[in-house]
Figure (cartoon, rainbow over the protein chains, first blue to last red):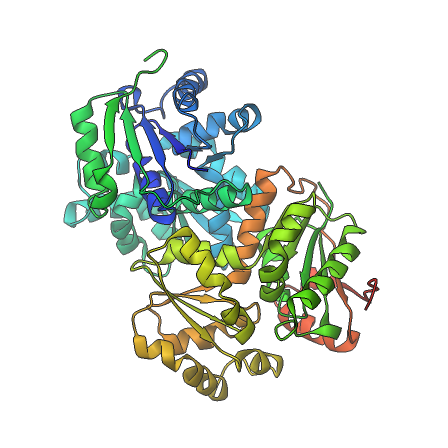
Length: 273
Length: 273
């Protein structure tokens, strides 16, 4: 099955999921579509998020993808069930993989979740966690400064640690979570900074890593893994400015230059951009 | 879907998988069948392992299970593909989940695998790892003393550490794996001892934990999770001596006495015991 895995995101955060897919499934072809023109989805209405997401899905279905990964928390919260019901290919989102990994990791059933205001307000992680185990204590915390910080390239150092310390203070004060879900696909880029502030005894769960892991599970379970030996191709599309998208993509993929060689950045034409 | 998850093993090692299923999926009903009478499967022929495994599967299918977990490395190596093709319910084994988790964890693409002589000789982990990523360096090592050590109850302390140090010496000497797969369902019981010897910088992958995690993924993906609120029931069957099986089961489940309350141990009647 050498058809590509399709990955959609409201912008560039989902590139951390694409990066993990390329690392954990190095034989798979990938098509990524980031809706940077209309990013962020967080403050938008449910109807709008659904419409935009379906437009991205239609674009990728025309490219004959074999699996869809929704690499955006907001889009996952609003469209996962609908897409799973209506598409004939496997569809996975970023929320349940993180929740499941946290449940595997926790020793004392107390899990923290950080995310954007929208994601935390949606309660999606809390529902996913309690849906599996009603005895889990969940401590959710919005960290609205983290996405702007990442987008400005402030990933480590004193300034990043100051922001992280201030943002995570409510969780630090409780001092009893043993596992923390990074409930936003931007956060893996500041994982080291978050670990420094929250302490080494807390296990960080990256929804990007875990989503790639579950994509691997579901592909194998459905006999959809690519058994071919050709060098895989990775195509990256954006609805917005190509130069800026290319710069950010290069930043994330700088450690895997081989894969970046085959990256093609085009302006995606979707039905109603 | 309140039907049970069925778990089969050649004996008691798979109880660590059952324990993880109960921890990570606390709402699910479970039926465990351990073929302690004919354990171990490791030295047996492929035909014999297949015949015994099918007998266990038939026993559980009569109990209307919704998923089958093969919690034994040897049985997984010989029967997983056949069972996945022939049964109408999802079937998962213990090898691929550990391999996928190791690929997610490794930083430098060098993974160690320890297991029984049979499992290491079967090459199943190496094939699973290289099947996903041909650039992984795999260092397999049989540890034939670990199962007898666990079955004698030597789990920690000087004696356990001496045996572990001697067994793991070839891997220690290389000193460059960053991830180690515990490729035997007995090994989670001596995880702390192995970690002490191999060093804290090596990430240990428990195939039991990872198999339970993937069972959770596959159940949700197939819409088979138990949404009910009743207290789950766990039934444990053995083909061999009940008193000894009960003692070992109690040892493994001593931390979760609630669940153990509902354990029913019966002598399993299988078609050709």
